[in-house]
Length: 218
Image 1 (cartoon, one colour):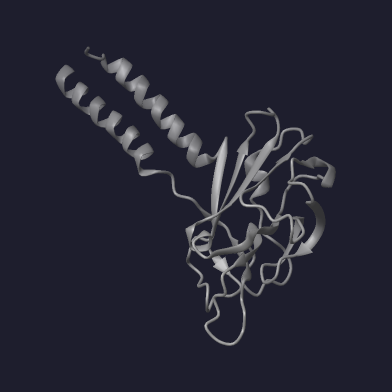
Image 2 (cartoon, rainbow, N blue to C red; image 1 turned 180 degrees about the vertical axis):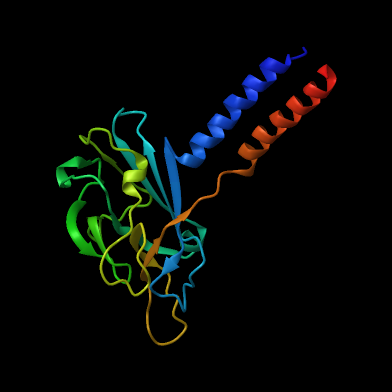
């Protein structure tokens, strides 16, 4: 079936709007935590965790967080491996009561330091017997907030640099080849996860089709 130039243009516009929405992160954004406070043994520049912030589908009006360890950490998983704390900031005024859906045994601390990455407005943490991977929770009861309200740099002294997010992960195999034992570390980062190439190719392909259609109608 042949598509008219007008219809192709409309399809391309819709496709590029979807791409633009993803880039502008109206519904979802993801960031890599690619820095470590043990950077000699766990070097900076490696994607250790991914943080995704999105508009909640199951609870409209809420913002969802999902924090996941990636293969550089899961590949060295040992007994009781998982995320023990996670810090983030916000431009919004909220309290611990606005943070819901945390795992059992987890709670919220305010204005807390995450070793090497500065102070965070909110730090979610569990005990050694309540580590989580992945870690999920929601922000509720904040009118008009968006995902970008939760991508805010930490404050204060940060030897590893101020970042949007930081996490303490523990329970991995000893990465110190010497006499010491290192089975946990803090990880931070603000590096956006790139939009999948297939999304860009979709929009580009439609634009090519429009070009061809225009030539035929010229």
